[in-house]
Image (spheres, each protein chain N blue to C red):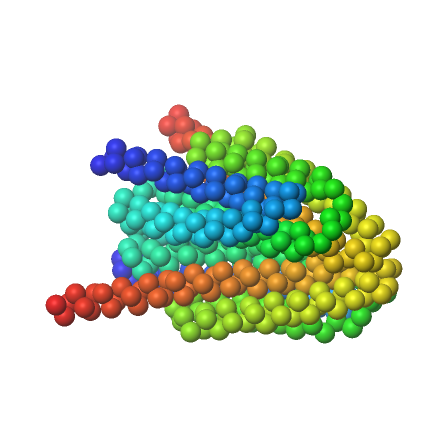
Length: 224
Length: 224
């Protein structure tokens, strides 16, 4: 039974990584649809979102079954309940990718306001955060999780830069305002994706550190 | 033992409602600090957020203990794991109230751009959504949860109205742009609060309906 449970946990981990990969791809496609002015690619994100939503339900069910049938204790219990929270974050990142695609479709109908440099950079960092934070979770690597938190500052910095630049456009050229506001929203969506990744990273750090503290306490209790 | 477990579940429900009431108050204070140009009130939200964060940890622990020690089945299991997701949403609504307060403090240092009408209206609806969705959750009232989802459209509609109005200000009077962007952010924060409430409402509907479907299936199985 122990082995079976371990196998189920492995399957859960695989599904989490698969869902994260789908989210990564949705982020990439949504921003590339803007950069390459390719609204068909934006459409693809909408199908992706549907698959991401279904994946959330599948994993949620899997977790509930593990809780009900295996009645896991301590470490595994925390792992499974954390997984249930993480898939909510992943699903909402998928929603943000859809938000970006919707704005990309509108922006692609107008002349391009400016070359896109900071926004694809933000997307790249956000994608790396999604990938790494899930890796950190399944391998219980709090160092990697900390590096994800650090990258959130980079994304926030880039967002501030985008906001400042777009404000300058708007002030000097009022006819750019509609497009500038759409780009502000795109940048903000990426910032929110990074925030979701950071939320997960904080949970991972909390989970791993609680474990470390517990191990210490157990070791001390044994020493006494 | 059964009775003890029921008592613990009641305590969990009470804590959830208490946390929701704190979030409601944080939203109210943040928007009132803008409307009344009272930056001291905005400061209060920061303390509130701290209490909300602590509450999240307390309830999360409570849920983990219930899962580990009581090993609940079916309906109670789903209730507890849902509670763990809901407190994440509540905590993030608290973050949004802080975001609003930060913008209020900046806006209060400048002449008021326009009378605030739609934003307080959005806040009022968002507060009612927070209150009702938690009531819907603890009483498993899917009708009330559906009414929360319906109110999300009202908030989105008001947000669109705010965006259109502020765009007009920005285009006709470029020196209003900085303030207008701050107000756009405030409106967006309220929209996100409403989104969080809607996310919870959807979970409640899913939870209650799954229950209804299950009851049906059980009844049919009995009939056969």
